[in-house]
Length: 211
Image 1 (tube, one colour):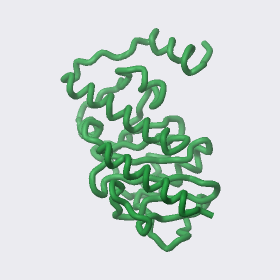
Image 2 (cartoon, one colour):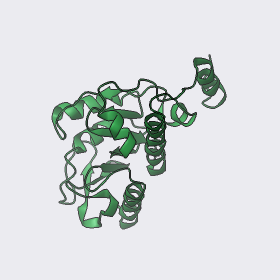
Image 3 (cartoon, rainbow, N blue to C red):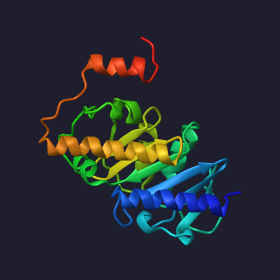
């Protein structure tokens, strides 16, 4: 059973995301898998100031609402990601300023590896999900597919989504991705990125991947 303490921790994480301007008003949503249950922000809730009354609890297996609170309209892709990625326990959908600018560009960057934090925490490649109506089954399917083998994705003309092992991990990925997008935009898209050799060095010496 989900405890009051766990709900309080979930709310604190949501407020932290809001205070770091990862989303405004109702523009984001968050979920946290605990065993076979998932805490999800309620539909229409504002993560920066969410209260316990706006926190939904659902079954991981079939999405059944367990506490009478309607979950976010994006709950389908939250649950799908968490089912597909058993090593991941948190999903965060956000719309931070510079990353959302990138999501709205016609010609998006294809390389976000401006600092080592991106390949280490977010991944070397950031997939782009085509625009599909928010809350639609089509968007949910596309996002779940994009995050099968990635931890971060851009949703065209919409926002971003990350998955993490815990609340801190997901938050860190979101913050670092926003940092990368800020560097790219403020540089006028004249930024440098890590070379193939530098990426390989990180994989071997930081991530522990062998050639």
